[in-house]
Image (cartoon, rainbow, N blue to C red):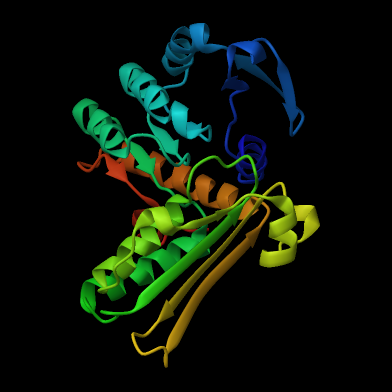
Length: 264
């Protein structure tokens, strides 16, 4: 995702600072993307490096695509330094994440889903849940989501969609989500193209009426990472405008970006 965001940001004409953070074992490594040498800094260097860069570039915005276990520590660092950020990583303690940002009043876009069209689908689901609560009362729900094997947590998008169905009257336990991470199953059961096993998101939500006579299916399949990278760039541009205008609101999500018509 880091490489995909750099490519999308470069295409959009944004200035990319050649700095990234990683594990101690990666410290000092150089990764080449879009003709730029991106230097990776280990945990012990992060705060000093970030503070120094923020001093030099007051309009800095950090993009975070890491792993669930790093979400809160990373957010703590950004808020300690005071740098705005776009959090595309799912998982972690979300309540703690929001509280950290609220307490420090740092500007941030936090969203479990950065894909523009999927965000629009999520927005439509939220509107339906708000306007027609209980419309699917009594219906049963089956949910499956397939992602690359490296995605360790349950899809945040799936959880967001399920929360809408719950408001619509469906009883569903998040533990019942079928997480598919085995490449063989992804090809044979889900239909993921082999070339996209390393980066995809296939979701299926199947609703059935109590008497089994009516069913609904909602599905969205994404191959590759470009949809998320483009949405991330939209979020960066959106957040920069909010910072420049000194907006009172500090925490945003991708639906906020969508509603303002800021999707390119």
